[in-house]
Image (cartoon, rainbow, N blue to C red; front, side, top):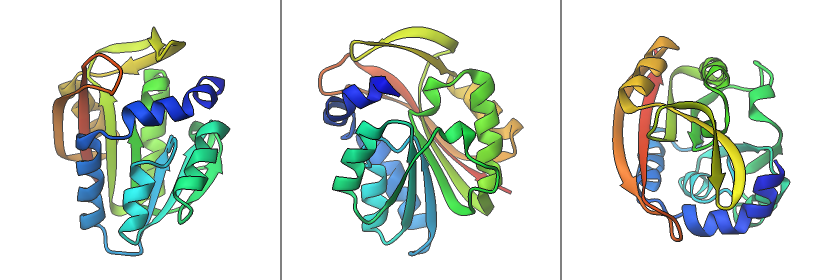
Length: 199
């Protein structure tokens, strides 16, 4: 997406140091045996998700639609594999993984596409696999929004609604919390971090 090609370095500077995101990634790194595979949907610049996970001896496949983001990701996290693609269009048999992560990438989809992506993610996960999400805490479907000076559309859920959507799509919610995070140059955001598991 052209928006993120233009914003790659600025986005990393403002959003890559979220302690709540880092804590959830580190939790996954501990939960999974070394050497297992993680699919990162909307991987961005590879920091911090792919960086933390490859540093813990996990195999990471990151997917992003922005070549600008992926260029930084390949430079910064050479141990990971990065794929230029729209993750909503990945084949159902794209691969099998012990975990799927999506930090603030589902926001850019409609609620219908978020739910379709959750179904796809469940199919990519091995039995007992983990899904980790970061979302912004608000209720809306494809609303116009100014993101770092660029026009985008965003969707979101309140915490209880997100939990219900995850359960409805075959996940068991392990933990979910709403936190406040202030990007380096932006206003405070209410964010939701969820960890779920397939049965």
